[in-house]
Structures are given as C-alpha cells and as structure tokens.
Amino acid sequence: MRAVIVDCAIYRNGRRTPGPEDFSRALQEARATGDAFLWIGLHEPTPAEFDRVTEEFGLHPLAVEDALKAHQRPKLEVYDDSLFVVLKPIAYDDSVDRVTSGELMVFIGDSFVVTVRHGIGAPLGAVRKRLEDDPDVLSHGPTAVLYAVSDAVVDHYIEVADELHLDLEELEARVFEPGGGDTRHMAARIYGFKRQVLEFRRATVPLAAVMTRLSGAGVPFVHARAQPFFRDVSDHLTRANESVEGLDRLVSDILSAHLAQTGVRQNDDMRKISAWAAMAAVPTMIAGIYGMNFDLMPELTWVWGYPGVLVLMTGLVYGLYRQFKRRGWL
Image (cartoon, rainbow, N blue to C red; front, side, top):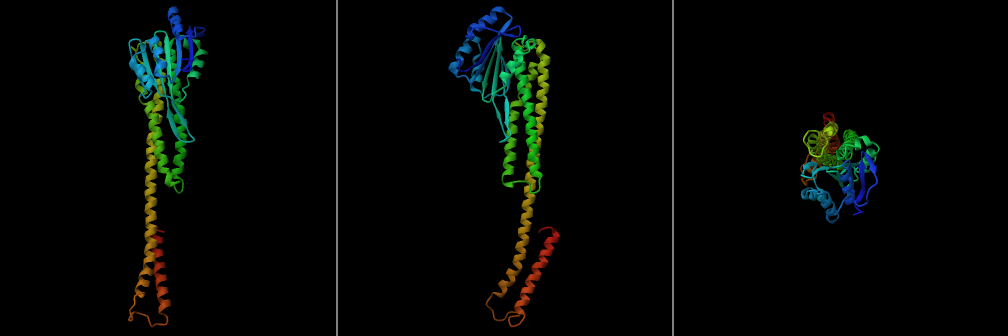
C-alpha cells in the first residue's frame, strides 16, 4: 500500500499533526477526537491495493468501481457514508498542440478525505501545501479540501484556455498569411486543434452541474459556510467554459476560411491551367492541320508560307494571352 499512498496525514483545527503511519489507526484517532480529519492521497491504485481503503472508509462499491476504472465524466454522487466527486485536470503541451486529461476522484465523509489520482499530474501537492499554510481554511475540514482541489483544477482550466487562445491566434495568422501557409498540412492541423478543444470541453462542461450543486444547499458532508466559495469556483468555471466555447467557434471559422481559401486557390489554378491549355491548343491545331498529308493545302507553294504560319500562330497565342491576362486568369 505504501507504493500508492502519496501522502497521509491527520489535520486537527487546521494544522497537520503527528499520527500513526497505518491509515486505519489514523482514521480511528481522527474520529475519536471529533475535531480532526484524515486526508489520504492515492495514485493509480490497483483493485487489490484499494480493497483495504474501501473497507476501512466504508466507500460505496459503485464509487470504488468508478475510481478504479478512471474513465468517468466529471460528476457528483451522494452515498450514505460518503460524497464522491470526479474532476478532470487538464494539461496542454503547446509544442505539439496536444491537450491531455487525467482524472481526480475525491471521497469525503465522516472525518476523512480520500483523493485518487489517475493520469497526468494534478496540483494536489501544491494544494495540500497551500492549505497547510492557511489553517483557518483547513479548519473547516474535508469540505475545505474539496473546495481547494476544485478551485485549483478550475483555475488551471483558465490558464490552459489562455494558452490555447495564443496558439490559435498564431494558427489563424498562418492561415491568412499570403499563400495560406502549408496547404497540405494546414487542414489536418486545424482539425487536430479542434479535437483538442473537444477534449477540453469534455472536462469543463459537465463540471458546471457539479459546481452548481455544491454551491447550493442540502449536499451532505459539505459545510454550509462553503457555499459562497463553491459559487466562486462556479463563476471561474463559467469563464473557462465561455473561453472553450469561443475557441470552438473560432477554430470552426478558421477551418471554414481555410477550406474557402483552398477552393479559391484551386479555382485560380484551374483557370490558369485552362488558359495555358487554350493557348497551347491554337498552334497545336494549326500544326496538326498542316501535318496532314494532302497536296492541295493553302500556302504550301508560297515562299513566305512557313514564316506566315508561324507569325499567325504567335499572334493568336499573344492575343489569347492578353485576353486571359486582362480577365485575371493569368
């Protein structure tokens, strides 16, 4: 079990206190005093490793199944002995334009908090340190942990959204620069960017209902005085969702503009090809006529027949060139 336990500590009146290394005894001690709670953090536990946690904390089997599978949408579930919340932290690698998401499950109940992390690193270490530096907040118990974790995840959404906006502005500039950038790969890159925005939406949009519920009354294991703080998180999440929706609309508009530009360039190319083909057809037709093996053909016996035909072909081609140039085909 020690391999998957990131941290385990008892907090009394908002301060970390020494306690038994065994989390079962630590939970008993926290419950015995009535003014303390145990916070245990786990990283990608296996079913066998999580069995003891399930038994000691009385976690609901359905919540345990969700915590182990780690393919959940953000949600909130209320059980008899615990509250179960799923969050999806987001990370963005701008070097490859890739959004990746992890999963963070939070169980809170009678004098305990259990956090289970899957995938990319979530800011739990920083959250724990910040809470330990602010005993007044931490003194509100497990609710304070749930608020701080949610706030950290949502604030990072806003940071990622800002980074995506910057990269999307660069992509937009490349699309509208002279020549439209590398047309062979630009559409694929724009579509790939849209898929990253969709991955972002999967993390942020469902969380809105969770934060709305936490900011209201009647949620078990949530301190009534925490409702304004969860409303603040909900406001930040609304800002993040608005940014994501704006990103989605903008990337769709950029893709449409790129496809329209590509169509215009293809039409221009077809006109140029048609113009050059027409100019090539005139001398080809005349040369083809004179290439037929007939005796009675115009100007065959003229001294200036051959130069005259060349001048005629040149004049016709030049006239076509002027017409196409005037019409913008060349």
